[in-house]
Amino acid sequence: MRKYLVKRLFQIVLTLFIYLTITFIILQAQPGDITNVYVLNPKIPPEVRERLREQLGLDKPLFFQYLQYLQNMATGNLGISFSQYPRPVWEIIKERLPRTVLLFLVAYLIYFFFGYQMGKLIAWKRSGVLEYSSTIIGSFLYTVFTPWWALLMLWIFAFKLGWLPNGKFITVEIWRNFRDISANQVFNLILIAGGAMTAFIFLSYYLGRRLGTRRAAANVTVAAVIVSVGAIAFLIASTTVGYLAADILKHLILPVVTLSTINFAGYMLLMRNSMLETIREDYVMAARAKGLPDRVVRNRHAARNALLPIVTSFILALATVVDGGIITETLFSWPGIGLTMLNAILSEDMPLAMGALVFTGIFLLIGHLVADLLYAYLDPRIKYS
Image (cartoon, rainbow, N blue to C red):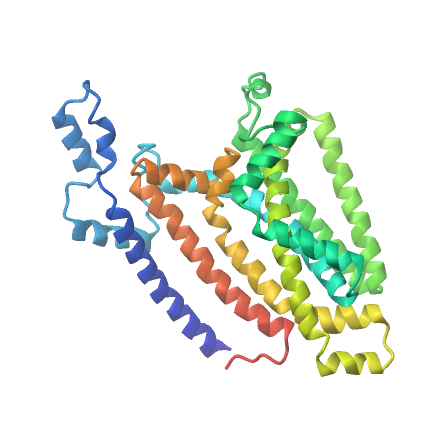
């Protein structure tokens, strides 16, 4: 295993170097630079524009810019944003990245869980109304045009019914009355509360498994979920911070639902196909021949091995979460890393665009490594030497 990890880490470093080089070439191939923004402004003389080019390092040869870029990436110095000068790129990414992670992580967990459960169920009980209806609906959602579906959700739930906000991060009218607290502070508290709730639920499940049966662990976990949701509901109803946090979470619902409905179908169909292949294996038939209950054969023998391609897809999806789903964040005006990347590219803000793309590449490479290691954990037949 150690030799395999060393080999994979070397491959990751080499791949990352090639990725950074290609990204630099593609972005530099775009015409113009950030100083073009000031060309049509008569109040900015040419000498000021040239001075700005010198300060941003755009007057140096392209090869020197490339070497400086590699040095900055190796030392963790992502530079200064052109469009939000003089804010460091790392500061902007640190502010926007958690918003994207929360949005997509919640959506991923929802559609992964329901896609896994539905795919397992319809593969086990074939040729029924549930399978036909689920397959038709899943095929439609899997092939639907994402911008059209997002706009449809906005039109129905935001404009027609008025149940949810029509995008953005906060409701400005509400936050005007609370000038002593910022949206970033409230959002960070949401992350802390969410992390604490998740840790509490997993700890409850672990203790339930240690102290009793699988059913007892499930009961303890359900109780932990109820207690956590009740505590959060109490904080939202009784505190100012909770009231403001509820506003942010309300803006989160529509993009999460949109992402979940689209991606749920893909995971359901993938799990169904994988499960259909697994239930024909000899060890599944042997488990049935032993007289084990259908639930045990389905969950412990068939579903666990059918989970391998699902886990791979899920891990790689998590790895690409950092790019923020540019389409989703743009349509819902969610100020995450995806919308930031798009605005950076449109405004010729190379350091900010590079920083966002670097995080995308790193997360994706790490995701591949994690998926390989999970393979060995889920399937003991897989060995790395």
